Amino acid sequence: MGQFTLPGNPPIAVTLRRSAQARRLSLRLSQLDGRVTLTLPRRLPEAEAIGFLREKEGWLRGHLEQRGADVWIGDGARLPIGGELRRIVPGQGRSLRLGDGVIEVPGPEERFAARLLGWLKAEARNRLAEASDRHSAALGLPYSRLTLRDTRSRWGSCTADGGLMYSWRLVMAPPEVLDYVAAHEVAHLAQMNHSPAFWAVVEQLYGDWRPARRWLQVEGASLHRYRFGD
Image (cartoon, rainbow, N blue to C red):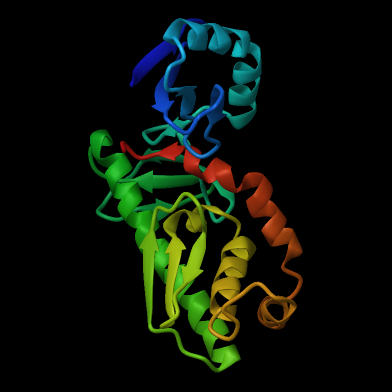
């Protein structure tokens, strides 16, 4: 139904949405992209909803601070690659280069985000294909294809016909986390469930998967803070 900006430092943009199913006001903060949505019952006056929003301002600002601000990719920004933060700096030549704590990006600054996005997706495909091939060979079961997406609800999936899908943002996570997700999805080639038998396959392929899974639960949402002009 529209937007409302909660004044302050910084101002907070809130999407107002009416729902025929809603029985009460509901305020939601997405940990993935920081979007704030206030859902209203169909007949509730908008002024009452704004009053509710102001009452919740302290809670909302506290959670936004915990999440951290979005990072817009450009010269000087810091971006994790394989779990290591690197500062984006201008580079020479035609190719991106990883240096000591930096990633050098050639070309005009206005193209940095697009060039980095393309490089990250290519690097993610290489790393995930290597991990998937290795785990698939160890399991003795082939997969049919590998695709990358910018998914928000899951880090990977496996279809009934053996297709593997991953979030390209895994290239920003520590290598052991990326490897765990690959082992997890390949394990579904043998067990299309999350039964004890499935987790036994994951452990067979990867080892103790719990620390990597915990990292995704605690830190995974932070990978969505990095914005490439979208």
